[in-house]
Length: 511
Ligand SMILES: *Cc1c(COP(=O)(O)O)cnc(C)c1O
Image (cartoon, rainbow, N blue to C red; front, top):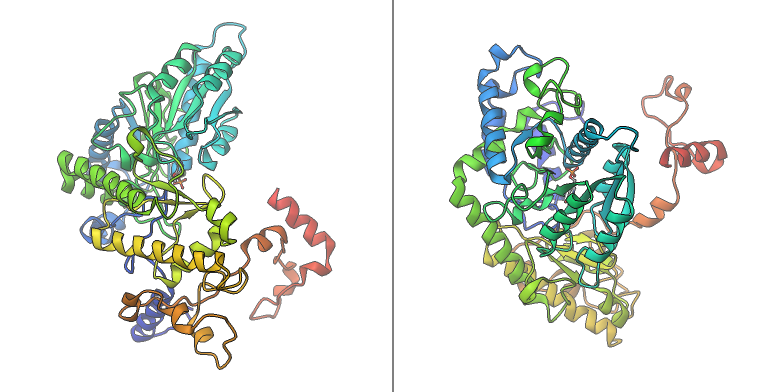
């Protein structure tokens, strides 16, 4: 690509072509639950491009980085105030790295406080609703994972928690729980769960990725948790579609502060008693800290609280508006949700044969990125609008979901067959719709313009559906032997199915 586009004009057009294929926040809401796809304001991001911030080496002597250090200390102080914890490390590059850092702190604490001759505390209790990274981080930190059940309302089953905490009480290291839960509910038992685990000698890790439902309203450090990670690339506005750099600070209570990450080449980056570096650079992805700094500074305490309130209001509005079309799986007291809601599509699938994939792909025809699919509950969609979406956009989303429900009902009624309808064939590309042949039992206009507003502004998907599960189940290694690179401009494709050894290697690599 760099060799093809040799003038600014060509490069500009290339970028424009890529953007045209993209379904991003500049076109419509990305209602991915748990991901918090909120506005990444230009004002917040502008400083990332300033040479004063961009052109400095992560290991530059600190007397050349005084401004950076001020920015880092401001953020550490503000995040501690927001979460109610005593100390914060900005070193982790992702939420999952923050999890690892927090669990390593817990392990180090227990090691320092173990009584003579007692086994090390290494059991980590994790509710079945947890984000996949939680269990992975616990295993990486050398812990043994014990799963705690959820009750029928989706809350952590406190009886099961009590049973397991006492069964493992002399080995209990921690409970790792998300609040509000990945079921989108403020679990009222969270305080009791913390007390219970503390009484058995364990510490409490609260996964703070859902902080967009808490900032300004409640502090994990105040309701009983000992350590949390935050996702600055969710709640604090760093853009994160496409897997760019993130920041997953870990925040701890006083007694865990000596066990935060540090760095052998930079004494200022953490306590001398710390657990060692968790990422290569002393302050991780320092080059993007201007974004959360600007966000917090611009919002102020009252603005942050208002953002949280509007995020929760928006999620409840969607839950309320859509609940007669798609049941909301879990709610808390008074039928309310937190900052996201899970729409249960399983009854619809049973009734009509239309699957959660069909709805997710059909949303693309309506100009929406799909919500989070089949997480944490298979067959459901988790919707998180955030405070950044206004009523017009939220209503546009609700109208699309309601219209999709009507389409599904036509499938259920037999008007369209289960295997050939606007939902199963979604997304529809332009080339498919203008093809000379059209053999489907619905009109092209039904496929392309199911609601009138699409005639004015329409996103055209560049590709149709691929079978993701097929790819997962049929691994193909595309790593040719080194000799094949000799005298070839383009690496030839390898037919992996011809070589059982290649497949074996590939399967191992996956394992
Ligand atoms: C996003 C998320 C994580 C992981 O954060 P990454 O930055 O993607 O590593 C962990 N827990 C929950 C609940 C999340 O939503």
